[in-house]
Length: 466
Ligand code: IFM
Image (cartoon, rainbow, N blue to C red; front, top):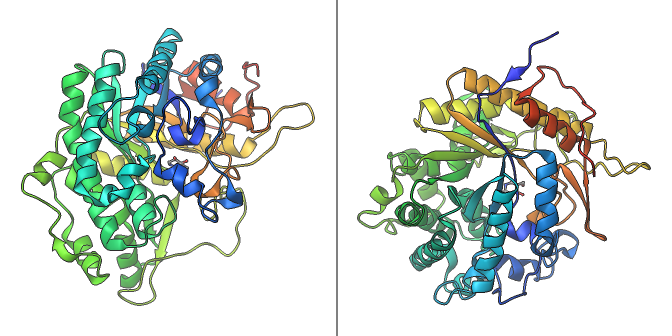
């Protein structure tokens, strides 16, 4: 019999979600409009005209969702707070009903023995703030402090793990440069300003969290793909270097290195820095490099980069033959577990992150329930297995990895792709709101129970009832 790949005692096994993707109740109980409400309500922005108006109706079904998490044996649950539910106008008066919702959720999780990991901002900015410039405006970072103060004052006695921001690169680049996400702006110069104000918001928030939630741990979550050149040619290698803007632009200032000079030059060449770094004020970089307790890493796929000529935008290359054993159902998301161990090592040995959580990892496959009501999502099990094994290998190499959160607890609103992409280990029937644990949920429950994975994929029968 082959020995199991054991994880360290106390390893945090969890699942993650985000407010706009699951809550619904978009205009109930005093909640204000978010930039994602506005974006999704604008025709043509989201596939099939889907919106998060109802999503998984978690706002009303949170009790049964906690019961489900308990049945899966989750040790931790990562969720986010909807800023406009708490501060409908972005700043100023607190909506107590909104705070009470999260307070009940936290109490319910603790009663079920599940540790809450709370993300303060996972993309649903109050629309009123967006109208004043959104993250391209420094004032948004100031309002974010009010929001952080309100949430940490209310929940800081019970929540002991805080994540300031989820994937600031996606907020900045997809929201302000390429218009793929809310607020749908198409201006690289705005995106760079947004990236700075997001990082500043993070830096300013950490001392507030420390004050209102003594003894808690706090960090930030970045999305870090694994970017490699298609060949050893100087141009391809340069394309891969430029592609690293998604994570290096954020990791470097967070870990005290300031904004990387080479990426600044790339941005200037794209006219994205028309006035240089004029938005960086004295003291900002010191605030951003504030010491944190952990780094959150979201990892899904690798990117292979090619450039035909110097200065060309990095091109992403994909093998001519694509299949679902090599790719998930998200277009061009190549399955590459070694990229996860690679980025974990890089954050450990190059940036000296003191502790790391994989705060998201998972795959979109739309395998539906079969005639017996079972969801045999074998590909997702393979995907998760490969990446969890990569985490194990990283730990053996010295990475201080303390936990792993699967994305996602249940199928939910996948931003521009609406409900087409299904990342859940639990099937969501959007007509009835029934939740059905997929085979991957049963498999993951066994991993948690054993605190280990088999070195080879095992499609265990599991013991979770639906
Ligand atoms: O659904 C998203 C999540 O909100 C942020 N990280 C990536 C996931 C899959 O695209």
